Image (spheres, rainbow, N blue to C red):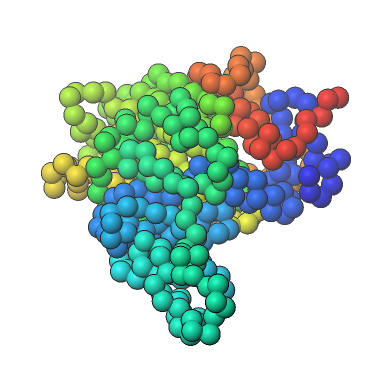
Length: 392
């Protein structure tokens, strides 16, 4: 435990948590160690973002810069974006293509498999120096429906075990993984990463005006909460019969195959990132926790490789207009995240209410508009962080 453990004993009531969790710098530093460098899996890229050998993507795992690279052997690796000599960051471009990565400081050269090729002046290195000992440090990785996960820990369970009951939902969103990247929107919210991740179905028909205008809040749905803190939400969407206020009604048109009813699927992964399908939008949200006060979100949008040009254009237009940071479904979220963060500076505790009387241990099913999945996520967080629960 860091800091003042007497202040940070977790409340005995499982539906409560201390507001201080969102603001304490010592807690954030411990999160980087125990969660982001701990035994959790983090989605960092999709194969569609690295379509050709030599393609790369930079990201941050917590505070650590990483590189996802499709090597010339067609294998995708995730390595720390740090020269194995003096630790210099190798690549600063967000995405690109490279046969080799050269450190700007001392010109150590690595191939796109992460292997050290050359080190100038090595004739003056100690006799024990071997290039094979200085390859880029590779993280443990796994791929699921095209999504590349990485973990810093050998103690993380197998990915399928970790994903648990949310695993079947990935196929409904990502299909067989054969996707094409349409593009990104990137935004920084003035909030703590846990406030961003503490979203639920309760707020959707109440906060988001588009849900009321389009009468989407009436559909049936469920949430599944897992032992590792993930939540999978499935909700039916009623036809938007009153969408005449839109100049282009195709923005809420569902063109899914086989006459299936429109649905919304949200896989909210612990600690961060979401995989979402809403109408025809295929969206992965990658998240970077910069500080206790700042969280960066990358909205990545995809289509299927088999989509014809009309369907590709439909998904592209629907994506940012519906679910982007200024989309008319999710526009209000950013303002609320900031107001949550400001409000949590006041003393006291957060208290979840809706549906919590019927809470069950995970894995469990709860109603789509309840808050009862949130305390389950927080219990996993508490255990990973090692915070003791107050017994009073």
